[in-house]
Each structure stands twice: as structure tokens, then as C-alpha cells.
Length: 445
Image (cartoon, rainbow, N blue to C red):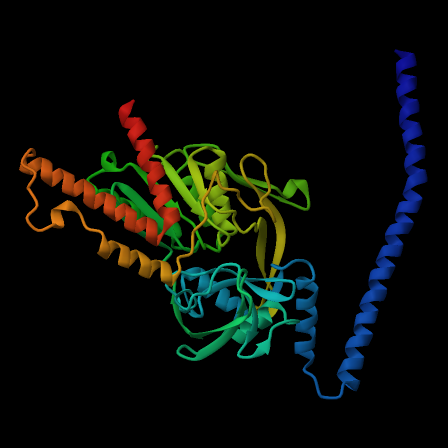
């Protein structure tokens, strides 16, 4: 025992000696680093004063400082920025669901403004702006070299005023102009409808209203179908949904999960990480779910898709999502402004980060683009080819009862409606076909 104690004491003493030897250089390094920071701040002060006194024109000192702050934040990543008092108020209004503008969610890439997604039924959407488009000019003025907030400011204007944006699109050989009339953007967070026995929930954004809208719309559609026993599944359409509030992404995911982790966030310090888990209760009562995503599905949309995919609660269909896997915290500042700072990355239940990679669908389904000449050809084809029943003097089918004929006609109408949907929205039709197949298997069992 005495030998053990001595050995232990010797180890502690040795450790103290080593610590003392290392601490000296560490303290010196920390002191040098602080000195360098103070020197840089002095340099900033010198430059600020020279601009204020010697620049060719009078400058507003407050604008200079605001520009410096914004430059510091935007140098970190595309999503960190300074929000002036007006910008901070605009952001608060947007989360409540109504604001003025074009109706697009944008980010910045290689100095240009990139469209994350157009918002459904807004001026930008109706003008044909697509996810992945690059905006290079606004009213003929280049946005290259501007911060994202400055570029967005150029796109703002009075409701009813006209704006011309120049777009570069993948697959198009030349840039082209799009004219848009600004309008008040009223965000309907969730729209719903039924396709046969499938409930289609279109989630356009994650704002304060999303979960409550989702629950109310779902209940309405189920009631119209006559109860959950008549529902064969749910399509959760998150295409071109640019995201929004983390809390709403968690609650929407929770609506369809009975238990388990939904998402986790990990910041700079491990102790700052958080995990969010589902509470018991499944809005869909175990009915199969297909989640639709594309390149315009970002942030909160990816949290929902990733959570339902990892728990095997849903089949994810479409194309790879945008890949925004970072969390921004909005911090109020003096003078009514705010700072939007990236503070963490988020991870799906399986521990994968979506940052820059996106969510990969279980089944990749591209949305084909229809050409005008194809549509005209289809119309001509449908006019040329008719059936036996359309021929003059054709015989009637007398082997079926009226009820059997009626059933055949109803089935044919459903098949025709499905075919028309496939022409209008191939990805959605594909998702509905999956649910029909799963329902048929469940019935057979």
C-alpha cells in the first residue's frame, strides 16, 4: 500500500511539473493572440477614421459601422448576417405569414443570388421562376458583389410595381429576363386535397401556422373521405419548401411519429447540443406516407424528410434536396436590429448531417418538362383515335348489368384522372401509385 501511494503521489507530482512546463508557452501564446486582436481593432479604428475624414464625399458613420458588421458576419457563411431594424421587422412579419415582395426564397452562391425555391401562387411562381435559377441582374443592374441583403433590398418595392430580373438557368444557353409585378405575399402554410383515397398535404413553408394548418386540413380531408378506414395513405409534399422555423419542423415530424429522436443540433461546444424527441401519437394512425422533395426543399423541409425517412415512417420520393443543414439563431441587438448567426448543424436521427449533401430520396423520380409541341401532338392523337363505341352503328355490350357497366365506367374515370395527373405532376402521381400498391398489398394480407 505504501508503495502504491508513493507511486501515485509521484505521478501527481510529475503531472504538476509537466503542467507547469506547458502552461508557460500556452499563456504566452494566449497573450500574443489577444495583443494581435487589439492591434487589429486599432487598425479598424484607424481605417474608419481615415474614411470618415478623407473620403472624397461625406459618409454616414452609422452606415459605415453597419456595413463593417455585416461584412464580418457574411464572411462566415451565406446565412449569417446583420439585420437592420427594418430587416428584423420584415423577418418577424414573414414568420407570421404575410409580407410584400416577389415570393422567392434566395441564398447566395459565387456572388450571385440563387433561388432556393419560389413560393406557391406568388408573382415569382406564376412568372415561371424555378428553384436553382441564378439572378444576375435586377432592373438591368448587376447584383454581383452585393451582399445577399443588399440584393434582396433591390428586389423589394411597392406592391403593384414592376421589376425585371435577369435569370441564368441550367439547360438554357442564354440569360433571359423575367418581368414580375410585386404583390402582397400571403403564405398559406398548408393546402390539402384528396386524390382518390389519398390525402395530399402540400406544405409550402414552416411558419407559426404550419402545424395547426396541417392538423386542421388533415382532419377535414379525412372527414370528407368518411373516416381513416377509407384513407389509403398520405402524400406530404415538401417540394420547393424553403424551410422556416425549427420548432415547426419538429412539431410536423412529431405529428407522424410515435417515439424516437426527430433531430439533434450540435454547436461549437458539445455541451450546447440538443436533442428533440417525438411524443406518443400519430396523426395518420400508422397509414403509409410518401414524402415528396426536390432541389427546392431546404432546411426545415429536410429535417422532416430526414426524420421520417430514418424512422422508416415514410418513403421519400423525388430528387435530392437543397442541403441546408445549419441552424441560425436570431439575436436581438441594441437599436432594434438583430444578428442572424449560424450556431449549429442539425443531424437526422441516424446521425447524418445534411449540410451541403441534402436528403437523398429512397426513389429518385425526376419531374419531366413538357414541351408545347408535345402537348399539341397529344391533343391531335387523342382526337384521331377513337374506340369501337364511337363508331356509327356499333353493337351494344349486353353481357353486363347496369351496375357492372357503371362500375367499369367509374374505374375508367379514376384511371383517366390518374393519367391526367401523371401528365400534370408526374412525381405526385408516382407517390400516389406507391400508396395504391401498398394499400393493395395490405388488403391482400
